[in-house]
Image (cartoon, rainbow, N blue to C red; front, side):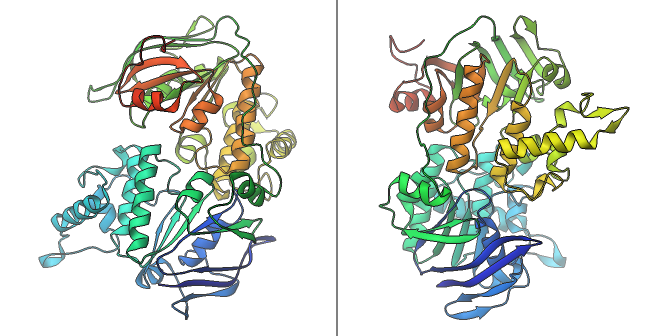
Amino acid sequence: MKLELRGITKRFGSLVANDHIDLVVQPGEIHALLGENGAGKSTLMNVLYGLYQADEGEILLNDEVQHFRGPGDAMNAGIGMVHQHFMLIPVFTVAENVMLGHEDTKALGALDLAKARQHVRDVAQRFGFEVDPDAVVGDLPVGVQQRVEIIKALSRDAKVLVFDEPTAVLTPQETDELMAIMRQLRDEGTSIVFITHKLREVREVADRITVIRLGKVVGEAAPTATNAELASLMVGRAVELTVHKGEPKIGEGGLTVTDLRVLTSAGAVVVDGVSLDVRPGEVLAVAGVQGNGQTELVEAIVGLAERVTGSITLDGVELVGKSVRGILDEGVGFVPEDRTEDGLVGAFSVAENLILDRSGDDEFVRGGTIRRAALDEFAKARIAEYDIRTQGADVPAGTLSGGNQQKVVIAREMSRDLKLLVAAQPTRGVDVGSIEFIHTRIVETRDAGVPVLVVSTELDEVAALADRIAVMYRGAIVGIVPGDTPRDVLGLMMAGETPGSGVAA
């Protein structure tokens, strides 16, 4: 099916999110929509999907003008969408989420869950996903939840599929699997719009590339374009794609984790005897396929895990047993892996989110009342310093693009006096310009003598930032190796193989 967008314009007050955008996607084509956070990519696709109504312009399918009053109309016309932020009901099972809105029923209107389960199995088998139809979505890791979103879209047999940042929470292996699925769909005649800001993915899978900046189409490119050329088109300037850092200047003290064990409420061991240290002036990166205990390790360090044994000390102060508030007060900055669930309060303003962990400071709150002038001044300074794209400090944080939400979290955590920075998936879902900025800030924090623990499933990020790398597999540390360890060695370790003699640190 041929998709054409003509002159699409969408305004939010004085902000022009889409400015007369033209886009044509041919049948059996993967068309990448590339742009930095806040460029207008997701807004454009939300117009296509009927979630927003365009102020100007029109949508055509096979040269016929469409009038979508909502997502139901778009789906009925053959359009499917995998959203950047999950559109799933956490308390429902996988099968219930996939059938939601398209329920099959038996006699007397009873839901045909057996048919829904089989449908999930069929789609999952067709595309190589391993998903339990009876699993409760809220209990699944974010990477598996993303597979559910993809299965949900594929189950509708859409002729045009929109993937909005579908790899943001996928491991490198899962990303490769998704690329293969997209090629398979393309070869079967499906038209695909692939929204991303990961240059490697664009060059690997796209047939054509359209670049959007500040709501306008600024150019088209072939997949043969270099990373530097694509990054420059996206950001409007030359982007430094290499992290520059000197040799670490190691200090005394820092974080020491000794024989740490974390159990689930059911008694399963998810962190199994982990010992590591992060010294002032270095970045220790924890690598591994998602779901191997990294999340629970981080939760234990910041006080979010309940069933913890072992020791976690920061400059000699024991953290196990302290509350989250007590740990933050010890000087721990925390960038969670899921910003929407754990990093922000979407209904609160940008300014309020910037002081979530400082609400007890006299600088901002006295007598239970927010000092509005001080807060506004602080927020405006952080917005400028961290290049947060927003219409103002009083805008709800939940209305910002994913990358700008991440900048709010980064700005909040790095604006305090820190004794430790814990950053889980710090650049998940952010564009190349923002990655450059966040990586620079992490290195600056390290160079200021702060121990930095980075947890990332992105091997490129691990290699760029790490002075040392700890690889986790099934809740345990396989080995701790130098930051320049080759990717193939890291890949074997991520599969559970112990590094060879002379490699482990």
